Length: 244
Image (cartoon, rainbow, N blue to C red; front, side, top):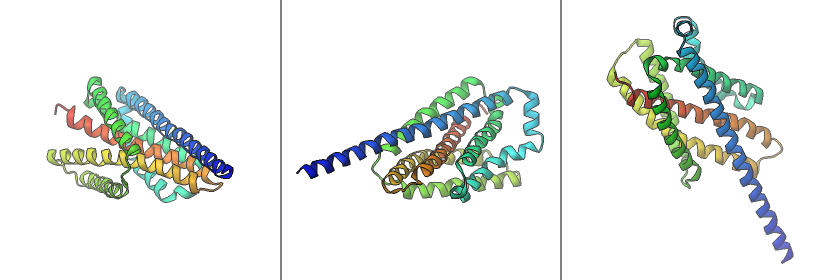
């Protein structure tokens, strides 16, 4: 009996430790994501309110780095995650946030601050609801997530095709933004569940290397949620705040 009670106590303590660790892990992910958005907003605002900076970003070869840099960083991360160190992953993360800030500078030319703030608030509320759903749901979002990831890469390919061939179509623009909003809304829930499940699996079955893995996973998780938030924000801004 005493042995059983000892086992119960040990199991309960382990569960409590995992729960506390999960809370800290999720806080780290959301903290990194929030910090990245602050960096992105600061860079976008600084460039967007300077005619000289705008001309450098959008009228020089730097434009190609701003447009294709984030895609290149994501590809490096996807294909080399296991070989990348924590400092390198941090470099990719902050580099992505900085490049995204530069690419978002144009919104300060196309929209006023009220429209940008409204789109941000709508996105934030939707993001919180979707992330909470992903964290609490018992349904496995894996199959849906895999489909949505394919859809996101399809959008990237479509966007590149439109840019290369110079296609200008209001209907196509509307369709892409609607699809992006739906796809990344679903990915927000999927990524949140994945971040949670990765932590639980690593804590339960991981060995001595679990700490390093989880540190790297927190960075990648924050970047995934950051990308979803920015994509939703862009779509909401262009769909609902544009007068043209």
